[in-house]
Amino acid sequence: MLRIGHGFDVHAFAEGRRLVLGGVCVPFERGLAGHSDADVVAHALMDAVLGALRAGDIGKLFPDTDPRYEGADSLGLMREVAALARERGWRVADADVTIAAQAPKLAPYRDEMRARMAAALGVPVDSVGVKATTTERLGFVGREEGIAAWAVCLLDDGRSVGGGEAR
Image 1 (cartoon, rainbow, N blue to C red):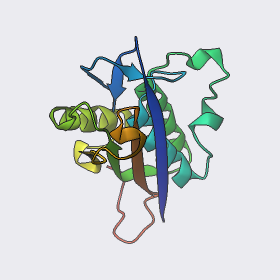
Image 2 (image 1 turned 90 degrees about the vertical axis):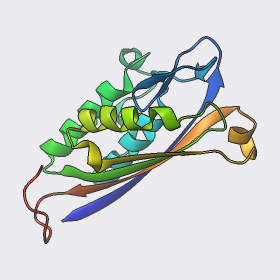
Image 3 (image 1 turned 45 degrees about the horizontal axis):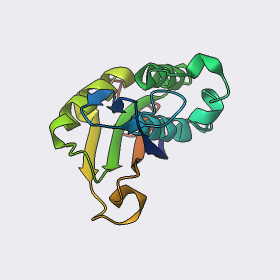
C-alpha cells in the first residue's frame, strides 16, 4: 500500500541565529526564529512523513512547550520520525521539497541538503529532491522576512504492486 503526505512550514528571519536548511548551515547574516534550530525545510519534510503516517504533525510529536526540544537538531528529530515510520511498517519511498527564499541563494547547498535529509530518513539520496525558488519579491518571502517550505512524501509498506522490499 502507498500513502502520500504533504507538509508546509514557515519561519521568520531572526538576528543572532544561524541559518539551518535541510540540515546544512547556510552562510547568511540572519537565521530563522524558532524553538528548535528552526530548520524550515526539515520541518516541512517531517510533517509530510507524519501526515502520510496519519500521526499528526511535528508540533504534536515535538511540542515547542517541551524544553527538551529547545535548540534541537531537526535532523535528529527527523531520524525519530523515520524510526516511527519503520516501527509502523512503512518506508519512505520518495520525498520532494520546495523552498521559497528570496535570499540567500540556495543552489550551492541543494545536494548537501538532499544527502543529509536522505541519511536522516535512512533512504538513498536519489529518494529526496530539493528545489529552491524566489517569489519574485512578492509576499513575506519576497520582502526577505522569512523562508517557507513545502514537502511531499510517499510511503510504501512493501505490499503495493511493484513495491518490492524496502531499500
